[in-house]
Amino acid sequence: MPDVPGSPRALGLRYGRWRPGQREAIEQVNQSDKRVILLEAATGFGKSLLAAALIRMWRGDQEAKISGRSVVLTRTTHLMDQYIRDFPWMGAALGKDLFHCVLEGNEHLAVSSAPCQTGWSCSKKSNGKCPYFAQRAEAYTARTLVTTYASALTTKLGHRGLMICDEGHMLERQLLTSFSIRLPYEEFEAFGIKIPAFGTMDEAAGWAVRQQIKLDRESESLQEVLSLLLKKKAYKSGDYSRDPARERFLALRQVLNPIRQLAQADTSALWSMEPYRTALYMRPIWAADHAHKLFGYPHKLIVQSATIMDGERMASILGFRKDEFEYITIPSTFAASRRPIYFWPVAHLSYKSPTSEIRKLVTAIDMLLDHYPKRRGIIHSVNWTLTEHIQNLSRHAGRLIIQPKGQNRNRGIDTFLRTPHSVLVSPSVTTGLDGKFELARFQIIAKLPFENQGEQAVADRLDDDARWYSYQCAFHIQQAAGRVMRDEMDYGETWILDANFDWFFNQNKNLFSDWFIEALSTRKGPRERR
Ligand code: SF4
Image (cartoon, rainbow, N blue to C red; front, side, top):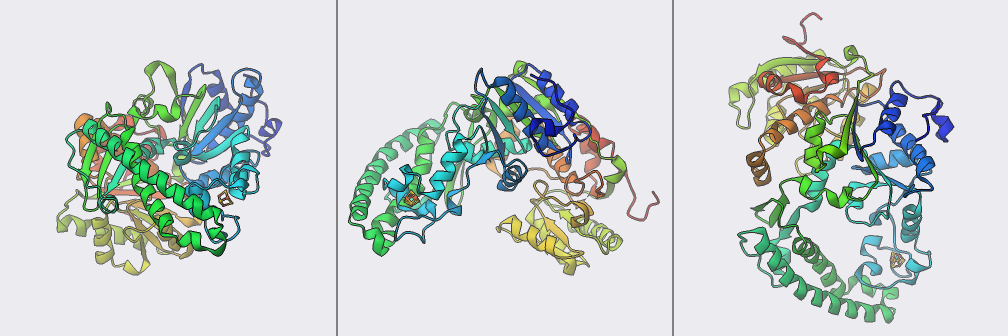
C-alpha cells in the first residue's frame, strides 16, 4: 500500500487537509494484514472521508491484482446521500419507489408496481430506456458503489475486493432484521393456507418447501394471464393496473417471499418463534450465524463506528474468527469539557417503576427544562409507557414534542427541528439523530435503555448469553451521548437520571469507551456549581 499523502486532495478528494488523527488512522488500517478491521472513531472524526481515502488508495494498489472494486454500505439512505454528495464519483442505486414507470399507459405507477414486477419482459429494461434500470446498471458497474445494508443483502453486488461498512454499530440489528421472517395469518388465509403451530425450525422449513411448490404453481399461471393481458396492450388503457389477476399476483408475492425465506432458512442456527395477533414471527437469535452472507467475499472488510466498545465482543457478534480481525480505536479529538456527561441519580427506574419514582424523575426533568429555557433538547424515554408519564406529569408539557407511537420517527424529529426551544421525547433516537449546534444543546437519558425482555427473541438471547444484554445497554447509552456533540466547535450536555447507572457502570466499565469515561462526572442537579 502506498504512503498516505500529505492532503486528501492528492488522492483526488476535494478536501485540502486531513482532520487531526485521520492520516494516522489510515496508516494503521493500511499496515494491518488482517482481513477485517474494526475501526472505532468518535462522532465528528470524519469517517466518510477516511472511507473515501482508503478506497482511493485501495484502487491504486489492487488495480492489477484481485478486484480493485469497492463498496460502501450504510444503514440509512440519509448517510448514503451524504456519500454521493461528498464523493460524486461513487455510484449509487436508488430505490424503486423513487422512479416512475415510463411504459405508455403506466406512467402513474411507481417501478415497484410496474408491469416488469409482475413478470412482464419489458424491452425498455434491456435497451436502457427505463430510467430506473439504467441508473441501477450504471451504479452497479461503477468501481465504487454506495448502497444500504438492506439492499446489499438482497442484491448481487458483484465481486468487490474492499467493503466498508459505515454505521457499523447497526450491523447486528440490520442482519437480525433482514433474516427475520414474518408469516401474516390473514394474507396466508387468502390463499387457503393455515399456518400451523411449529415445534422446530426444521418442521417449519419443511412445511414452507411444500407450500412454496403450490404457490410457485399459482404464481406461474398468474404470470401467464398477465402476460397475455399485456400482449393485448391492455396496459395502454390503464386496465392492467386494475386487473384482479394483477392484484392477486401482488398479494401472492406478500406470502411467497416469506415462504421462500423460510424454505431456505439455515435451520442449524438458533431461532426464536413468537406468535403475535396478526402474524407468526421467526427471528434469528444471533447475527453471527447469518453474517457470512454479507461478509463472505471481500478481500478486505472495514467496519467503522463511534461505538464498537469491545472489539472481541463485536467480532463475536458478527461472526469473525479471532485470528482474522484487528480492533483499532482512535481517541476522540473533541474536548471532554465541550461534551460533559452528568450522572444525577434521582430515581430507580425499571420496566414497572412505581409512581413515586416516576414523579421524582419528572420533577428532575422539569428542573432541567427550567435550567435550559431557550434551548432545544432531547429526552430519551426508552419506552412508550415512560414517554406517556413524562407527557402527562411534566410542567413543560407544552414544550414537549412527543414522537407518536407507531409513526415514522422522522416525523417527530422534523417537527422538533422546526420548533424553537422544543424538547423531543422519544424512545428511539439514541441512534441516527444529528443534533448539532443549536439543533440540540442538551439531552436527558431518563432510564437505562435495556432491551425489552418481554420480546421472545430478546429473552432467548439473554438465556444464551447474559453479557449481550449489558452490551446492548452500554451501546445505546454511548450512542445517545453522541447525539448533541457533532463537531469540535459544538457544545452539548448529557444528563443521566436513572440511579441504576451507578451499579451498571461499575459492573460494566470495560464496555465504556475512553471518550465517554473522560467526560463523565456526578452532579446533584443543574444548580450545583461547576
Ligand atoms: S422496465 Fe418497463 S415496465 Fe419496468 S419500470 Fe421500466 S418501463 Fe416500466
